[in-house]
Length: 260
Image (cartoon, one colour):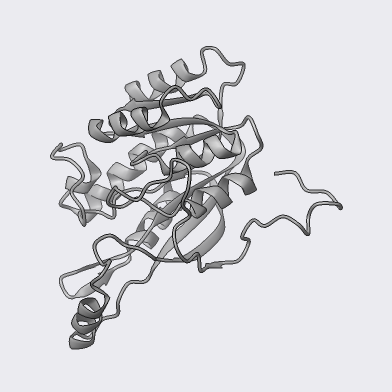
């Protein structure tokens, strides 16, 4: 997004490091039917801050299409991947015959290097562009929700070390297609295992710093609202947490990096 003296005060992009978003944005094609999808406000703010109209956004984990729908609203082109063919079908039907933007969605294991390269190159065949302008990643939080029964699915990986290694391989498959000096973001939370916190978000952040030439530009703490697993069960979760010695997760992290 380009700023000038006339518009910089009016821009409503959230630049705070703490995002209290509140209820999910609704309207249009936005939907909350899918486990693990995130509030539309998250990709909306990131896309408006780090891209211009006509730029291309790549989503590593398409899910129910939240980022795609925001791209359509904001007139950004889009490339999306997901290993779950059911959600690919859902999103395809949801988009209908939309021609507002140039978009492509792919039933693809994001760790499959050859197929990822092929899908991206096909997207750009009819375009003068050869690189993407922004990457967003909202991966499974290790093995909290099993999205498919496929062994390649990150949500089916049993070992934390293997999960991190597999995620880094997926990142390497897409980061080479990102323009230099452009941004990429991951949205991820921590988990609770074996009576202790597993800081998954920070493990992934550190692995990215160790494996890629990039600079960490922001750490945003985002509130969790409307989690499908907890809707209508707030009192039960509060009771369980008070009976234990831990705390109730109410946040996720957004890490923003610049590719160098």
